[in-house]
Image 1 (cartoon, rainbow, N blue to C red):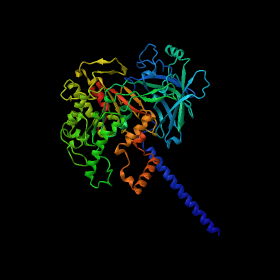
Image 2: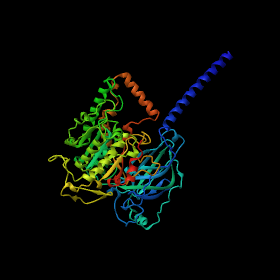
Image 3: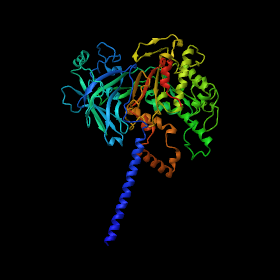
Image 4: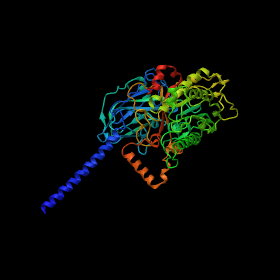
Length: 602
């Protein structure tokens, strides 16, 4: 009997040991999968070079979870390294994008589960007890095992209050670190500012760290003054159907700002951005990618022809949800996944990857905009550049939104912008040639003779132009984005609704003059969800109609989340803001600058 009990006990121990090994094996696989999402050392400092940009830097000190920014009412309009007379200018009225440079470290569990910081800003008046303060909050996520310098986008916190003068951070697990430049707070300008703000309200920011630690340290807030873009003519270049919505739905569906007397009744409203001044040009038909509708089309060629037509239709109709007039929406009909080949074999014509067709008119004929009348040529590089040049000469944009080639890994994204840069240079030479100006009399998108120009983010008086021969594309701006970040497909990190902060950059090669954080209200984020949902390629394929396939999709989704492999655009794009690197168009005429923007081409 004792022998049998001993055997049973040993068998039980063996079973428990096997189960334990299985659990450890599964956990190890999950942890390895999550960590492997970052093909770089997450303990490295982000390395942004703000020299030569329009950044204005406020130095402060984090002590016991509190720091103050004295210049919110009176911040100068020139870079911090240049002297400026004291003036009373509200940062809110000037509209700034703001980023907190801070040194972070993660806890032991933060190496296995994604670290999160919640920043809660509360408006309090001096002399009050602080009960029932007005508060707003944002969330920021970091890489597993993140260490070193990061840049947290705090624009929503500064844009939520009319009187931000003092900021308090209450953190969990505070430590001390002294590796950043110490601020100089003992100067006459700072004392004047303290005196001016001594009786105003203050913002207290409570920073709650989940698996991340913030040490007492010198900190910097980097400020960029935003352009007033409400009346600007904006051209958005989307390499594929859905790229305009992923990167810039909030931007093209209306300029946002906070209204109301206090955060409790203040909301991010639309300024009524003049929608007739928004243009969306999609470069490709989207006729590639996954064999998504195999249960409907057994013939691959027919499948991708239909997919291209469907996604072309998406690119033409979905912007209507954002209020863009149909005559301002165009698809060039080039073939998905072929732009680099077009560049390499120029001037030869290329064929669609999966259908074998070479006639781009198959997709172009779906356009309803009069702009389609200026499209010409076949599926080759010269045709792409020429069509973009013609559109630039016709639309005459103040701002061009396009992918940042050096920060985007997708070849179509890179080469859409490379073609755009070539077209810009051609258009600058031929901008007085109006042969491509189609008859748009009595249409909403006829160019306005009175419009604003913006230089280095300062608002100028309207310039009255007698005719459009004065238009100079070199006076415009590029707003550059990334939908397929070059290092991995998981950026922006974290959950839906969090802020988008500047991406990992470890070498001082990224070129920009400014960084623009375009805020999205909760309502605008909901609208953006619906705009993505209207894109067929972003939905689950139609196999969900069958119970077995629906279960497989559900299990695949659960596994994806457990393994940390969620690359869904709903997670990545539905955020508190949209982020753009701003470059004056005139800067791309400098070849060294252009090389930095384009980056490496494989």
